[in-house]
Length: 329
Image (cartoon, rainbow, N blue to C red):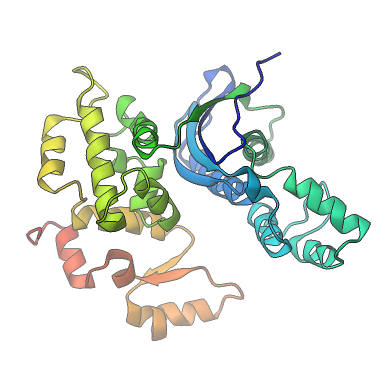
């Protein structure tokens, strides 16, 4: 039997990691996309704050902040978390969908409502339940998609309780986001799609806010993210010579830019993350042009945002900078 897992009764940060059985490479591009989506759903359901993550082909790292008191949320939040995990489907364990769950909980203190709240609360605000939910949901998808059976994961997941000190959390987050650089899969963290930093810079506001806490200051989220990037690249460049190191030129360029990504790189990242499952175009096209007409035909239109909102730049300027035809400010 494994040792008891180290957990805190207070708000705490954990570095979690898990490996594919027999070190098989079962997290290719498509699988990593699904795994990341499952990660976000499981984090929402479990009521944990996702700080960053990195999905490799054989293993994954996750950094979360957990508040044990967050498990006993009100019924509205409980239904929201349930729907985040199960969507419109009925959960096998209770044979209910989100709408049906809300109806039962509305009964107040009925025996069934009390039992459902208790069973759901027990799965929240806890790293073991969070990881069990994530691994089971992904395994179910994988086995169904590829007509396989059994577990995908080797032994228990690993966990490290991290002091919730911004400087310490920043070092652990940087270690996680630098995984693809160390493995020689990307020259810079933002070039690897399946890590928290790339998704944060690609437009995920929750991840940006969580990573920004690692480098608190008076300059707001943008400055905090710039400082975090400098920390990452500095640590990546300080490794021993050879593969898996941030090159000196990249670090020098980042220092000259104050840690901020150039506008054309922000455009690339944000377009990459914004176009999956969304509609994307100019504001006029989205409001009254072809995009608007296409969305009107759908019973449940995908989320959409004009390019100007995604990039923070007029479209012509963004296009010019992306193509390298304009000087950087």
